[in-house]
Length: 464
Image 1 (cartoon, rainbow, N blue to C red):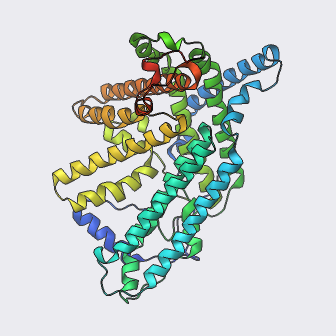
Image 2 (cartoon, rainbow, N blue to C red; image 1 turned 90 degrees about the vertical axis):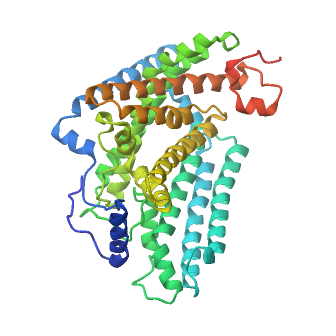
Image 3 (cartoon, rainbow, N blue to C red; image 1 turned 135 degrees about the vertical axis):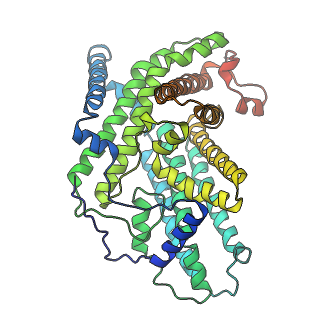
């Protein structure tokens, strides 16, 4: 791990101190906090060094090794083919090269946005209010629509499998969030420039490109940086990401598929469907923790090491939260910062008062639920709003109820109960619908009904 420099690097970076100080003053006046970047390590990095979480890491490592050993025995003695169990990985990434080609086009389009925004900000204008700049806003919204539409069109036409589908949908969301932050954080600067005022400098292309890959959704001209780039540490984080992919693969091939594959979908009763969620709890929680550790710890720290990004507080101890709001905030601080700055804060400022804050809070829950459903629904090619129900309905109810629970231990037990049931629902219900739509159940006669209603609820044998 590279040592941390307590001073921000200033070379090739220009900071608009007056602009950010003004934003901070306004935010303080309105009761909103402003995102500040400081030098800090990820919580698990600190806990591993202190030895506090090492036993948990060792436990999961032992489980992984047992799963892997079982897979090797089956591959060699039963399948007669070494590493046969990795078929799911190869299936998922079958069209990875074409997926990354589309991703490259998506990324290059953001450079076009950078130059278009820079040019537009240099055009003089007497009025700098929002209605006078609606042509630019309309062009920006048109770009976002096309940005989501064309990769999605490619996804369906190429019939991408799950992992590559997630790459397309998650990356369109990530890049769109990055672009929006860049435009929002430089809006005041653009207005000053258009009205003939003087600014220190427009963000350079180098600053824009650094921001596109650094692990933050909030644009700044510069961020705290480490003294040196530790490629060895980055490589170890990347290897852990690969190990996490294999861990999830082992969980599905040894636990989930053998169970779902043998089910008789034409005779599923309501009780069978309901009880199946309990079967999905253990593989579900393994996948949830693997996703957290692999993405929010290993993947983001890998990019932090490569880019000398020093603020690595990507999450906090969500596993020991004292209320639901704390859990949602601490699970993913990177996304939370963006939702707070550009959804909650903007809406609450536009509609001041307690009702405005409640509406803004509801909008954050709704937007998060919609995009989670979008990612999973597209990847699994079905509309089965498990994620939406878990995030928006159950999550909203639990958010309200959690405030009534004052005992920290009782609330934390309730949190884990909610997480376990939720992951069980995800594995069981999405898994059953996946099999139902792949030859196990006939489609409904009405196309709209077939799109909106799960087939395994009323499975009819397919016509031969």
